[in-house]
Amino acid sequence: MGSKTHLGFGLLCACLALLAVSLHGMKTERFHHKNKNKQHNNGTAGRRDLTKRISCDFFQGSWVYDDTYPIYDSSSCPFVEPEFDCQKYGRPDKLYLKYRWRPYACDLPRFNGRDFLERWRGKKIMFVGDSISQNQWESLACMLHASVPNARTTFTRSKTPWTLTFEDYGVSVMFYRSTYLVDIISEPMGRVLRLDSIEGGKAWMGYDVLIFNTWHWWTHTGKSQPWDYVQDGSQVLKDMDRLQAFTKGLTTWANWVNHNINPSATKVFFQGISPTHYQFKSLTLHFVVNLMRTRGSDWGEPNAKDCSKQTQPVSGSTYPGGPVPAQSIVKNVLSTISKPVYLLDITLLSQLRKDAHPSAYSGDHQGMDCSHWCLAGLPDTWNQILYAALL
Image: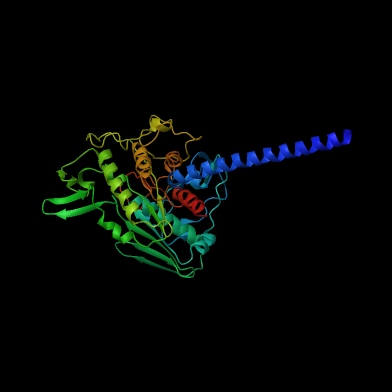
């Protein structure tokens, strides 16, 4: 009798255990199903954010000294323009070449140019933007050349695009100059910046990777401004608030991406906002004032007017001057795009590099250049992150 009771009790326990497992499985299945729906609904936003896609925030960290840097010598790279070749044009210090970006959350993979070329064999990669895009394009060209110095290459530098092809791999890396991304049209009244027109986008079709950039030229005034009027819809204006103009122009580009990009064929990146380290005393036009202004006090040197004689990065992971106004615009516009566009959010890590500009050592820039970046130098890190994102 006792043994039967014990056996019956055991069977009851086993049945209850199976029932519990079954109920848990149903609950777990419902939970996963809800999560799948949630992931589906938020899929675009997740893909759009590079840091989510690669499960590591590469953009929060600090600069550390690394004696193995730089990863190439600019004197051995045939693609560096005089504008960025700081060592050739007399920069006396080399400490700025010895810093490596170290994210807090994970290790940033070291750039492997041979692996890059193998992965993208037969593909076409295009940088589209202003001279900051050119800066990054030249950096990648040098990084790849240093990795395969004996590879056969052809380089065509027409008006646009510039094309560097690594013949042994069939990989072409191009630079297409488009300072605003939207069009400047010559009309009888003069040159008109059309915020709603992007006919130039026809030249960007059919590429495997596109890396876009625009911002610096939106703040140019006077003789350096390449347009006479700005057209916003049916309104033709002599000028307008530059942040509003930037927002409208970038939105036109975002619409172009939505209508023209096939994500299964083309990966799209936006470079982010590259900062400057100037102090603008004479900038008084209300459309532009405060958009680009940077003071030495922003990095703890109140007497510094610009990047002159700066030899070390800002220490730590915070830039005292705060974000650039255009950063929030970029993020807001990118959030409206239904196709995956990955933001290379390079602003903070670049703000910390007050030492990395050509300053007085540019071969093709009059005065003090605290806008572009020396090569070798900071743009190599941008490309290192690009490489990591493409793995």
